[in-house]
Amino acid sequence: MKLFNDCYKEELGENAVWPAETDSISIYEVQNKEQIYEFLSKPTSFCRHCRVKGITDGHPWERSEYQMSEWTDE
Image (cartoon, rainbow, N blue to C red; front, side, top):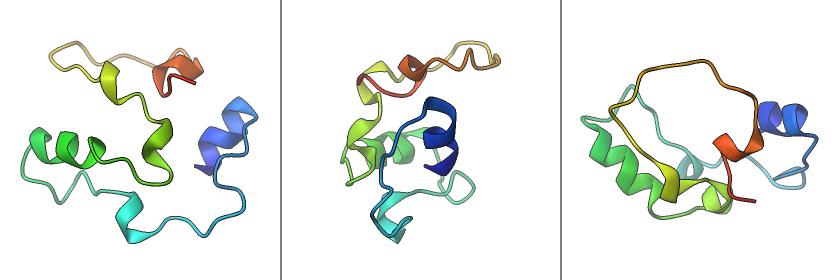
C-alpha cells in the first residue's frame, strides 16, 4: 500500500494497521491461480479498491505503464 500511495499520491489505508493477515495472500503459498481469484473476489478493507473485474490471464508479461487504471477502477 505504501508503494501505491507514494506512486499515485494517494492516502489509502494511512490511518489503519496494515497489513492484517486477512488483507493479503502469498503468491508463493497458493496452489493455483483460482485460489488467488477466490481471495480477490472477497474484498477486504484494502482490496475494495482493486480492479477485480479487469483480471485476465494468458497475455504476455510487460512493464507497468504506471497508470492507476492498471490497479483500480477509482
